[in-house]
Length: 342
Image 1 (spheres, rainbow, N blue to C red):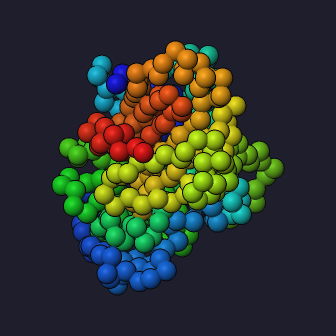
Image 2: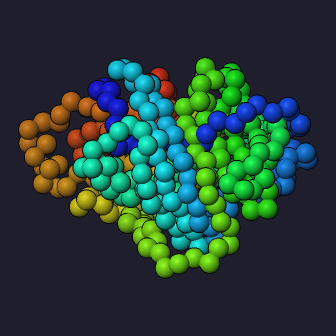
């Protein structure tokens, strides 16, 4: 595998800025048996958590966020600090506009390219990049949460929570400030296994339920159709659908969709553990390319890996198709998953 850091791979990574430690107020360690059915919460867990999964979509808002990323690479630490404007209309429409890069220093051309890349990844940035409880039931099964105080963020008083993956021996994974009336994540930080803050995203300005001006909302480019079962799915995709047989503990399949992009047909599977997500994509090679490979013999399987902080994107070429994996995996976990693809 070739290891390359892509500063442009900002599709992968950003979570929130540092908070001063607070005295612990309450600790909850949820279990699957104590959680209520239909996405309920076990006793003692703050009720506003049930708002978090959809808050970013059903709450009208406009604000400016500061996003910080610190990636350790083979050549040293890379840092990105930027400002972005976000807005949502409360009915599912949203936008993320890049405003400026504070670090590193960029030329005008570099800043323009960075802004273009960010805007092209707008859907990923708003839906997937940042900390959020995405599936309440899986969150209850896989994560433990401690309420540790309150903090003012962008003029709103939020509840500070620390969230750790159950069964994972590390000091701290996420620290977030959540707005109880709305469930919005006002600020969040991510820490590595050594307790070092590696990402931070925080609202510097935020208006909830504002009168919104005319805005250019995000337009989804790759809407897909649900993958059909059995032979119908192979016909729909154009090749036998693949899937990893081994995914990280606690992850479950959320969606499987087929869509068109770049003149190719793709299968997109999304897995989650309640907070973190893992993407598996399979692209069918065009018939002419498959015929050429058949004539000249199958190429050796090649994997190109791009890493940014805890995120990895791996592109794995095969004779009739290629697959991609994007998620939070170490090298051993990625290799294990790639070997399980069938």
